[in-house]
Length: 463
Ligand code: PFF
Image (cartoon, rainbow, N blue to C red; front, side):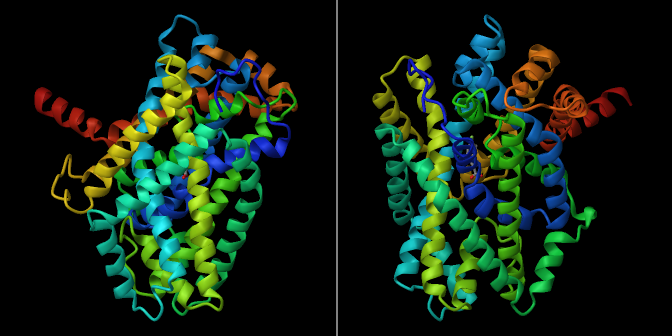
């Protein structure tokens, strides 16, 4: 979807908007990243902090992005230029392009893994394998220098082709059927997982919080993941909002998309953690958690062969509907701001992002000893984009709506197609003016250790 079309096509149905926004939100973030970081940061306590961020920060910022998009009828850059001409607010768009570029580089790598697992499933590769064998297959695969690149490139070609041919709408229509199917499959996996011997420990890990396990890095990651999972902070939903009809109730859309995204993540957690404990897998295993856990579950269920193929096909499609929304941000920037032809912009962006992705992939294998700020390149790029760029982008979006756009215009914009009742409007304004920006700022400073540094600095200088 581009903001450059003369007459802008609008979503024809309410469900069209929700499906497109949910298609962007629901992806690897829910099914791969959420369980993996919940495992790394200690389970339930992380989940509860994440949920609090979703409600207090994610939801209001999602509504803010939709308002900015629908009001301006522009992409992320054009939107700020139009709503606050001649001001530096348009630089929010730059955070977005930076974040989109980086996110898609490692996103493409993991989506490639998902395609590899379709092939593993088709050949029944894990038949009768032990949990240890499944784990070493995964590790051998992601650390090998060639194979993951092939699958990553296939995925990036698919993403670029969809943007180039302009069939996003087709994909959205498609995902209206496939997303509910993915949900059904996850529910079936949930039933299998919670009936495994030892499942209870996994449920306790996911739902019984032990806040002493929480670290500041965990809190920062929960914040970053709220943005990542809801596709916020880089203007994706500004672009989608720009295609929404005036009659659409934005408040309802924001609530529905947030709810769907969060429910899928929690259901994915319920499918993973009971199995993690049942098969004696380490919850803090890392990036491979679902790829190591799920083949064990599929082996333990009737029809596991078919379910496994379906699951990885649907996961790849969910990744694709998210990836096109990420690539679109970069392409819109190249074509509308840098005045490149759209097709040239698409090819150019896809190639550059794929190249960065290749470095990400190799950083898990032959480049694994390249460590920057204690992280390999894959983790570093994930950290910079999700935990730094997206929250900062979101903070500025909240400040813009709260302080520049203001209560009166918000009320007028959301009044189309629905009302934000007095009380809710008040809460919303407090959230975007104060709570969200301040919370992001504090978590951010503390999480990237600037606050610790300042405190130590002041202590040593003063005392
Ligand atoms: N929300 C997507 C996911 O959870 O997989 C990832 C994503 C899409 C992040 C679009 C950011 C974005 F703008």
